[in-house]
Image (cartoon, rainbow, N blue to C red; front, side):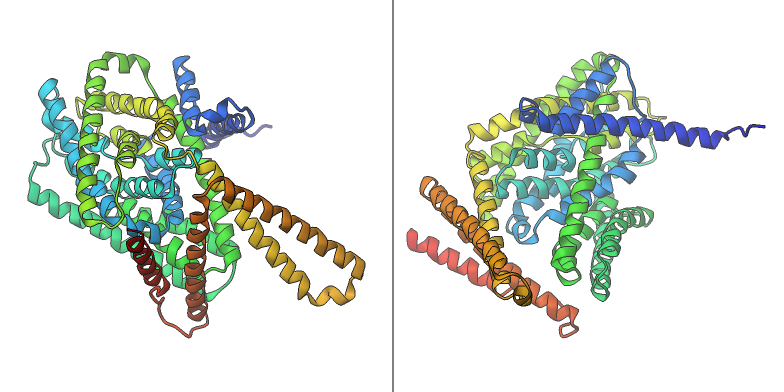
Length: 528
């Protein structure tokens, strides 16, 4: 007698097989890109898109890509990981341009894409506005992964990461407000849209802040790395789902929770080892999800449908490029009037060309109701722009950054940073050996041998640092930057110890940050 598997069991088995196939292909591409030197010239995320396109061209479909899958399963961890790793100190210095790009920039993008499509094609304005809203999001998945691969400067990374994190939430809110207009159940009223936007964003900020601070204080009560790691995962998905259920922006909620936990919660509630474990966990999860998302983006392309809407796609690409240029250069110069940290022309150029579109735009396009007659046009247009963005703009980013001399010294700076870290580590090892109580119980000859090994390695590291300083004069400024960062970290960790011990009820503001900033300004004035 045999037991026949139920329909549910067969469905689960089929889905599991599809997932394993997708995962195997994704990880194979990611591995190959690390092994062969030629493939290292292309960011592995873009390689995944190319492989997905190849599979789509021969009509091999790995799995159906639904908007719910991206928005509810893939998007929260990707947003949270980027928000967890972004440093508030750096983001605060660029808050003016980031806010302008993420809020005003989305409005300019929606209007700038919609009106040319409405004027030069047969598409209605309501439908064109949906395309503009879908394409106003600079996808954090694409941008963050690409910048990390290419090793862009810290300032440029913060600008693009900050914009992509916050404008995702604004773009999603704009899309949700506009989607009902072509269906005839909503109307274009600026005051209603403004109130709805404030409500969406306000709920997102509130829920994200409550969960972020709540988990931050909860982790103070215990020191269990695996539990604290799990809490960050729960906060990413929980924030998104709760915020969406309450009628707010889940994207904004996740970003706010991630920034709070990464900058505040990890300080007051986690010891250094736990912080490292949690960061490594999110690095892995981002790599894991990235590998799947980018492969599926390429795999979902329908070449026949794209060909039939080729003219519309070309018009959309031109509108997106021109609108982003106007937005970046205009808002960038306006922000320079009010911000202490200026955005120069080469950085603005990279911000313009680096406004890649990706999974969020695709998810929004796929979420258009099927009863809308122009749904396929919207999907094809967005897919075409995303494809151009990832392959043309993405593959040319490295050349652009090199041409503008924005990453020429990144390999040297990275090597120099590693040497400084190794120097500090070796000094701490020597200090430990000098003050270790076990020294009396170990053979003195063996103990001295270990000390000499460490001293020899420390000497080699110091020689390499000296050689690099002589060869690259600009690296000395990196040492000062790292010293400032270490001083600020020591101050923050000290406050966190007092909070964990119950001797402080709230995190104190940084004294050193203002002192260092003033000292830097004074030095700059003296040089002038």
